Image (cartoon, rainbow, N blue to C red; front, side, top):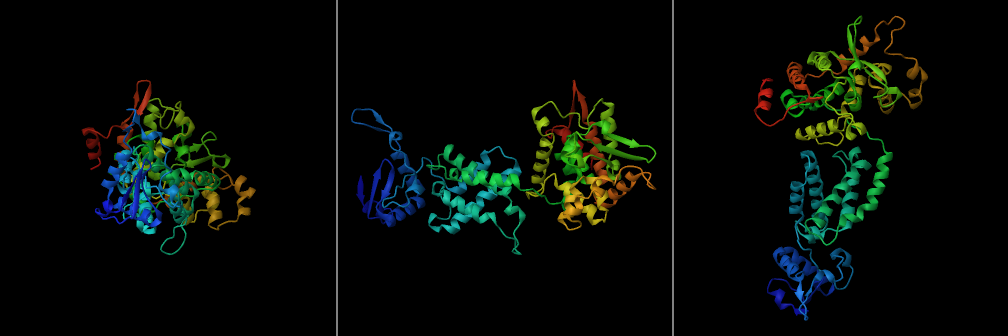
Length: 490
């Protein structure tokens, strides 16, 4: 059915000829089509009414219903942009991008940090589309977005630059780009399937890009940033830290990683038989055994720094021993599939969520950043490379190569790798662990509230208990008990 322009003219739309078909409203020629698109964009209620009435089943001459689902489906506006007479078919539920983003972030079961990241990414997409395609208005509809918009957005964000003009490693990382593709795909799939805000899913066209980026990410090494002093002070503010890290593994793992440079898996898989005291030297130590070590270079004996002793780490260890526990964190179920596959997964997630509550949302700041923090601190303190390697494993060697302290050839030295024996008594050195302990005590020197952290550690120890045939750790953050426990720190 076609109509003269005077009907729409009365509504402020100057189109010479337009028509209605099962596919929607259409106009002849690119100029009229553009005018019609602008009119429908500026009048969403009219657009909604047109879409609703066109999609409504109509009785046929024989009295049966002719559902419009039987018609040949429209490929949507993006697929017909080059035709002389473009289809202006609308989805069942036209929705502005900003509203769709708000609903998506609110409806998803996301952690706070994840919601912030997704909202920020989609907000940048809206800004880019508005800036690059002003004819779509100040707040485009979801169905206005095509694959080429998303591709252009990803291209623009592959190489963002700092104010100094230097490319940042975060933006160039294939892993970061993969996450952006996945986030865009999840949002537009939700908008298309659950909200019916688009006739097709524009992010489906990113499948090839996503596969290529995943391959590149698998080959690219990932390097995280060390924590800054002010960030460490913020993370370990006693009351805030205890409130979010009530389980023993959540509480102790970051502290051990900060003061000893240990990997998360090395911490959470520790057995109590790996923790002991050298009576003659008067030193507490722990062993990273071949079962828990990342590789052969990572097997080592580490002295436990004085600050961890002051907080009460050994007090906690002895409490677990008295309860009959065999592992440092006996409440972890190593028979479960998740813990078997990735022992530190839950702890890593919890720490990431905690960083999000503190506003430390940079993707280069993760649990593994503690390891980079300690490696950097040892180097800044002038600790000999062989001793630094013994403390942290081979990571110190890799760091020295990257920063120019040694060459790749030197890093392969048999002398360094095999004949140093930094933890064994030898000529003129009776207790080499004492030197390593001194290096850790001097290098990782941060003004934390250790006395108050010791009070927090005592509370965590009290709430690591036997429960039936197993163990339990922590307490609920709901109720008066939680506030009473936190009040003990005051």
